[in-house]
Image (cartoon, rainbow, N blue to C red; front, side, top):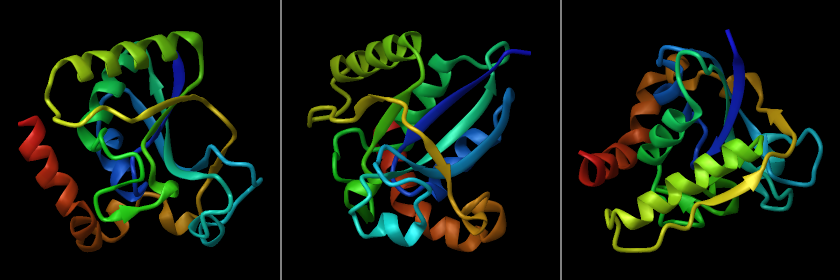
Length: 171
């Protein structure tokens, strides 16, 4: 078993857990905050847009069962890569789309994947998702973890626009 991590920001972290959590080779997925300058931020602090953090998920995966490249491809299908200032109904820099890379290999994979997506002409607008070096990841409060399991009705409401976009652009 070769456990690695991936960190993806794609809007509301509630909506980013389930698409990865259910895959073979995923050890765990945690919601949290990263990319900012405040240590151990709270949800309320991140909402003020003064911490520099964005909501993200950290994924622990067995690279012998699922590759980082596969995770990046799944990531694209969960987001609108043409929207730099939020995702769907969630607006602001704390919902910006970012692939946070942990190594030069992850950066190369993410950049190649982004270039291929841009060249595909799937989207009319440019791909604006950032690729940044990973910064400290702070786990969100427990009530945010595994939200799709805790409140499936609310999760369905949060996912509605995202799922429609996915159906329009990816299916």
